[in-house]
Length: 116
Image (cartoon, rainbow, N blue to C red):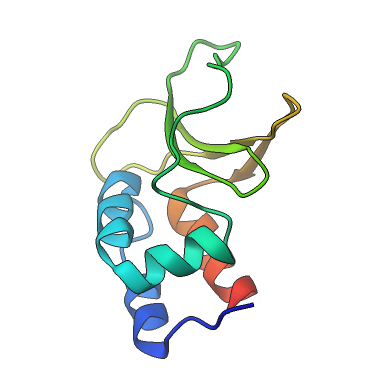
């Protein structure tokens, strides 16, 4: 496992935890953090094309935000409302889906802490 530079880790953990789109832009702009997440965190910003399109039964929107090393995709669910959290859904390459966090901020805080 590669270690995340201390400064990069502190930058990520200082990001706002509620606004997923702002957090995504800031994470993707930080090269060291984005590289760490793509490798050890299995959250690759360059792979946003899912294997198959998905739709939630309740009709809420889903937005592909990153791929994982095993061929899965991470999504933000629900409408994009500035400052409002959006749940994070992960689909794997076999077609299974799991709700993995109540917001992108919570997911990233866990990913950085667990993989650092």
